[in-house]
View 1 (tube, rainbow, N blue to C red):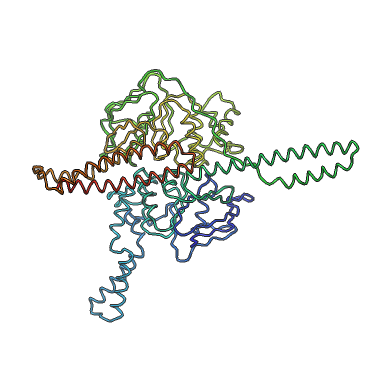
View 2: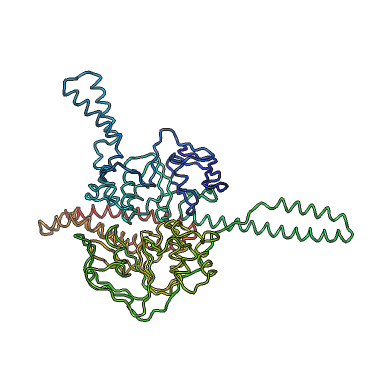
Length: 633
């Protein structure tokens, strides 16, 4: 069944410049669609047209009858005095109306109304109330709040007092609780920490309705969507797969179209040369050859069908690097920081060596950005100190970009930042970061958040540094811009310290993980993939710990047990051996997947194999738990 039908949709905000230029597509029931495209391609505009917030200039949008559609985009305005709990409860407006009517009927029956109509109506309402989960709303709110890291103390706060990221999380929770049929997600992961993003991924995978998501989080897209619609030049391109398939297939289509274009151009060149010769010979006396030459030129016109395919310009600039002498880049000694009664961290003692690439991870509000600001001298610590190596030079990209004079245009901003730079050099550097033509004369104040990040990075590229500190470098950037930054970081050979929730970025660069939790940093000198394995094992161990503690409360001598217990112990040993073999096989498949990232068919086969092995491992773990209990008697 078709849930969303868009036909010939056009929309412009400037005369003669259609942001949507006849886009047409359909979304069927249960599909998970990723809506991709560069920043400014019209994705959010399309969402606003789907929800009725904007009207199209031309075309038609049809939403299937009786389908409820929910959008997480701009944060709605709620009545003054609304708490977070009030906002979450707005998702249950239908439940509240039913409950109010049931209360009136209950009062009427208590007053002596025992008519058949009243009893029948109460029975209908009660069944409907139970059917839509009216008695379980508190449980539903609790689950969603826990998943999106909305603690009980936040639920009692005024909604207007929250930060932008916190408001986004609460609004996303409200949308999920509304239980819509069609879920429209516009950059849902932008202000979520890793824990909340993974919870959201799991929710979307289990969601029974239809999902259309705008996202630049490649991990999120890979794990939640099964189809891509790319908005390109106001029209739609279609790809039947997740983001990895889209990336590979897009390149394949480009190469195929380029080969077709080159083949046509070679044929045109050959025919044009022949026609030119025929014209020349005709002027030399063979007049009849003009006719053949004109025939060839008409043939050339018929051949010209394929336009030359274009591709986004690759970033050519890279960070200027300064050679580093020595082993120690920085040493954090006994550092502490608090805001009022709230202690962010204490007793931090960490050492960074040259060439390391460290990802600082942790939930929102734990103090990651504050720590970076202390290291950069923008905040003062309550205690402890930071010691830098004698030849260390740093560059810092903060989460919130600030420019000294936002009224300057981009060229002047570059020239003031780097004395002695020529105007042409400034324009060349800006062009490498996709600021071209008249864009370079825009004032900084009119740039979007993503564009300001790009401009700041462009300025950092000119610095000679050996310690690069990045705070959420990919926030608000489209996928192409993220890839530009990744290319620059890939080429940079100095020390890197960064905060990010972009798992693709973390996985690509981190060789060491600092986890900030409960006021302290746990140091994991491993890659992100290995860190996740360790965390999974810690989680499994924590879940089994209560059972062990319970047994320790009443220590008993370990009996030899009957035949059934002895058999369970033998089976347990075999099960553990099988689990070790499966884990080793899964690691080997994962390593092969990394090497085959550009071969979609092989990657798909390996992914299916890994899914099968993961399933078998889960079965063995369940079997292990049962055998462990049986072995203990």
